[in-house]
Amino acid sequence: MSGERYETRNDGTIVVEAPTGDDMRALGHRIASRVRGGDVLLLSGPLGAGKTTLAQGFGEGLGIGEPIVSPTFTIARELDGRFADGSPAHLVHVDAYRLGGSDYAPGQAAVNRLLDELESLGLDEELEDTSDDTVVLMEWGEQMAAALAPERLEIHIARPLAETGSTAVDADGELTSDGTRIVTLVPVGARWNGFTL
Image (cartoon, one colour):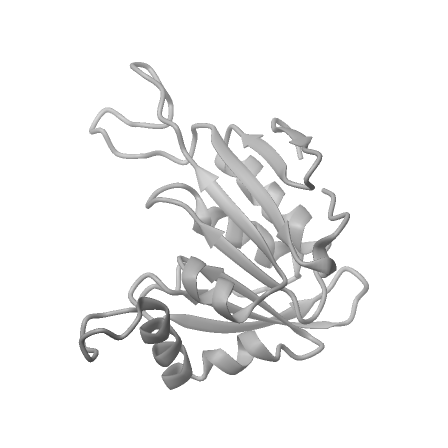
C-alpha cells in the first residue's frame, strides 16, 4: 500500500487512513491476501465512502477476472477466483442495502425481517455454513451478519470531507474518487485473533 497510514490498537482493531481510491483498492487487495474459505467480511459506510472501490481491490486480490461492481440491483453476485495459496476461491458479494423492507407483520423484529429475506434469497445458508472455498463480502449488512456470523471481519469506512479545496468533492459538489477515508477493521471471533495487514 502506498499513501496510507495505519495503526493497530491493543484490542486488535486496525485503523487505516487511505487518501485515494487507489489506496482503497490496495487495501482491499491486501485484505484479500489474508482471507480463507469460510470467512465473512462485513463492509459498512455511507454512500460514496468507497465500499465498491475496496471490494474491487478485494476481487483483484482474489484473482477474479470479472469486474466487481456494486450488486445493489442484483443483491448478490457470485464470482470465482483463487486464494493467495492458489486454491479455488468462491466470492459471494452481497449488497443488503435494499433488504429489510416494510412488507412484514407488525411487531416483527428488524433482524428477523432481514433474516427472512436472506433465507428467501438462499443467502442465510451461505452465511451460516460457508463452504471451504467460499468468502462472503457483505455491504450494508451489519444487523444480518452480526446475527448469522459470530466470527467476522467488520470493515467500517468513514469519509470525512474537508472544507474548501478538498479533492474529495468536485466543482458540482459530487464526491470524487479522492479524499481520505478512515477504514476501521474490527476482528470479531477467534478466527480473526491476531489479524494483521
